[in-house]
Length: 249
Image (cartoon, rainbow, N blue to C red; front, side, top):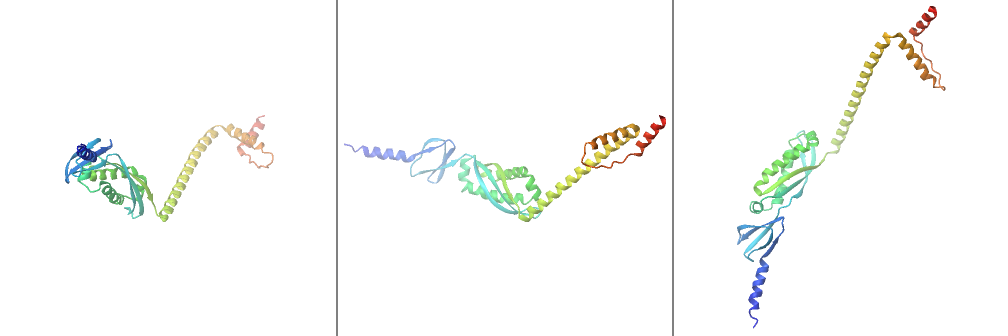
């Protein structure tokens, strides 16, 4: 009487075994008996159980660390550099069919490219021109991974580890540079002050009374200090002006 339930149950089980759910950020690459037969979009999809096989590919942007790499710069300095690579799959079909493991292969390619590119620059450029180096690394990696259906959107150098002796040498160099700038600024200030003093001397030379007023102003400033004995020289020109004043009187 209930013999029909067995075929129906087998059919329902067959359907359930073939159902696959793909999220919005996923694509499915379907193989039938080992042969590529097409792509599956997000949603509820059905494949033939035991015959079809579906590989899910994530299309979101992923960040992958590049392990620290020991390299020698163009000026023969040994440094250790690590970076991070931002990538995403733009073609799920190529990412499955053209490369065995696109994430591993991209990581290995990033390591070798990092050593190759940074080994062609001097240490100063490595420390000061990171934006240019990041763009160059991104362009090279993006071109190499394009046949795999992978888009490298960004590469960032995270850290440059210098030897201790190089750090001490750079610290001395920076200190010497600061001292040089301080001496230049001091010399420039002295030069500007001498120019102002020369201009003031020319003005005072034209007006003899100006030196007398300046002398009296200086005496007024000194008189505020009651606890010190100050010997102040009297200009000869000032005495001559006083003598000439008495004679005229």
